[in-house]
Length: 480
Image (cartoon, rainbow, N blue to C red; front, side, top):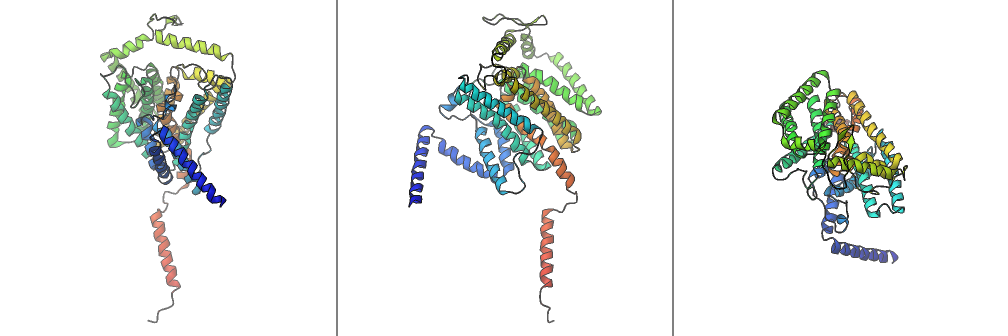
């Protein structure tokens, strides 16, 4: 009797909650149904789910969830839903499948955990001190953790070279689509941006993404014998430079140079000469054609322009333009704020907006969070370089070198942009990081598996043959 009453009460409560949700968010039933379908997809076909996630990272729109999405600086996208649902679907798969794990043992784990602990404590402290709006603080904490979920999803789902190659192809396909979309904006707006960008778009985001993916593309090109795909991919690399130039993103221009130099430094001698020749040829073409918009944008960095309340900043006797001066003045002001709370800072979103990842981390999570963040970045570099040097697989070598170059590019991009919290850069970045960090496991697995391993179909055939022979042995002798 009590059980029936509880079931009825639970059903009524569920209907009330569902009805209230639908009245506030009309699309809630559709989202719920889609979530169930995506959960099943992640459970049954995890590769398909991850492929869909890669596409959604750059090609999904924002979700309008009523009041939440209208909070300042809060943006919710389709891939946010996908990441959460896919995580639960994959965890369910792990629970019923022997041998699968979600978090592999990797050098990054300790620093990811420490960083999560530090920014969580700092943000909760900021809420108590009333520097952080609770809703916004919790949302940004989840976004940071979401990037690491992407990392662990990628590193736990990939088990062989075929998966690695498949995901890489999807990344490159999305890259082509984004480049074509960006190119189509040239001549229509002053500064181009990625698809489905909020408001007037964010050219820095597109530029950072293009630098990251150019690193991956060039890394693969320098390590693999791609035959018929070699020239199309080289053409894609050259084509990318056109929309990248029209982003007019100085942070992206600054990131492009160290990214490319990383490829030169860590490549073998013959390829290194080719890369240097391409660099010199590119410089010649740049000075021949002299793209006015890019040159004007670069000159703005060092052309003082009076703007009210923005003192001109001089570095080594060189005066900066209005935008760089404003940024440097913000950094100085925030540094003074940091001195009041040096160890744990003000918490995520606890201070005003500023362009510059390092000063942002320094002020929001204090000296402790900044130290852990730098250790995480350095560990990614060292581990990626180690993987590149140790792996013998050409695909893995190209991917690790490309990610190493892209990682260096992002380090420089983050000087004047909040690169490591930008959704459209960090979701691909952490997925690619997961692909690279799992390479040692794949190498060990392939080394332990003999090349003459019997295919599953042949195993079944042998099993059936043995069963048939055994059954004949047990059969009574024929009278004939």
